[in-house]
Length: 274
Ligand code: FES
Image (cartoon, rainbow, N blue to C red; front, side, top):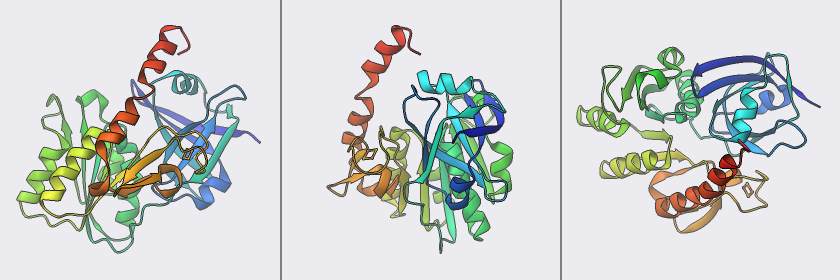
């Protein structure tokens, strides 16, 4: 069975959205879960978090940043064409029920993963503040979509090119110091961003959930590739996560593991494989 791409949109020069016909995945998908796809029989298996789903249309949306060979190849797949494998939904859904006031933080591409969380919280009646951060205004994504599912949207840029300079941590701190009382912070983005959000929320005793995105191979808890240390225990992001209590993550180990294959990737790209 192959999976048809029904829509493709370029969001910025490095990021595109792909809506894929996958009714069985759409039927069960929840925010926080992911899929593993393989473009063709020679392709590598790559995980992508589910950015949106439509149970009636039977489609699942992923948002992809072009960073290496597979994502470059995927960028060549056009509307009407097919992907060989699209397995999921995998992972444990984010528990969002019962939350009343939440800050959802998205850093760069993490914003794409933050979107379904904000949408579900909004549909559950929670008061949602969304804070997103990008390097500059040309990289901002999903601003209109996030406006619709939040009570307050703050978009920050590192260089201030959208008129609001700062990091997501600066914006969150301002909100907390202005008296906003969040039951929970959900932070999704680069490891370093999530680490510093957690350091901040620890000072204010705000429970914080992060979405870990380590290297994954099988996505079913068998290879051990996606292990993360949480509260001193080894967990597998693909089955125990990808969401975890951010205050319990061993960030140094996670960052070390995140850099493990960088040299191989660079070598492979230099050899013309991406
Ligand atoms: Fe293999 Fe998680 S990807 S155990």
